[in-house]
Image (cartoon, rainbow, N blue to C red; front, side):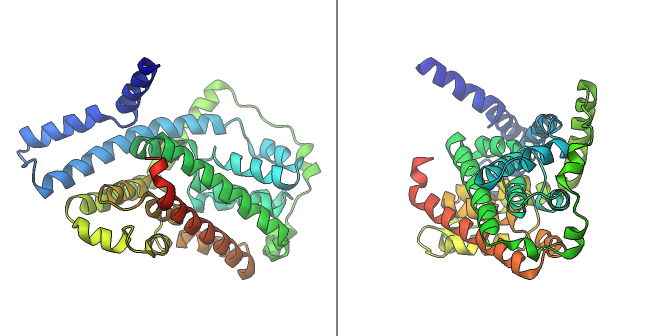
Length: 343
């Protein structure tokens, strides 16, 4: 049994944590660039180059895999699956389908509109809208590469629970009438989609689609990754730990709320927020506070809320924001209290 555990740890260190890459970068900075290993500059520069290279390697592989899986779930197939299931089970499936779409919140909104136009229940479409930017295969594995599998799996479970509860509450509150009229008026009956023949991709087309998704998504997010890693490097290398702990440490009872509020105005996906989260954890910030920040950035970013405002009325928008905000804050405090179980 110990042999299996040791083997898994070695595989995890090699392919996810990439400790070999960190060693190469550190030796290069020390022996070639001649930066003092004990200096703040070394810590910041090492963090920046290691995280940038690691994230882009993992991101390329993971987007390809998740996009290949996603190619089996065409919009027509997704509508048929969700159209035949009602109630909470439909919300669960909507949330799970969101995990195979590697999109940021802004990219998910057009799909949300398409599902709404197709006549799917509003709660189900919101479960998809919440989970799509919050939880996916790539984010889970990237989280595991930094925080370990227990935290990554717990994050995924919590994200799905928030998506299911959020969509269910919106259904219970009967918020469908608060979708803008131009969306509702253009609805197409589910029967229309059932009559359409679904096109099945060949293996070559799935490969081509996955490669195109890698190029498209990396083109969209590379700048945010560099900015996120840059901020993380500054936090890790130059900002005193005492300052970080004062603002976001466990001794501040409002740390989770502050992290949530700070995350909302930002626009990035989970790939851009991970380096910042990693740096904050290394500075002693509680895992719950860090996860609250990540969730706020990915699920409640200001640009995505502006886009959503164009297709839903204020009452539904603020209900959505309220449900997700409360869910994130509760999650943050629970992780801070019970985080020792996952580290």
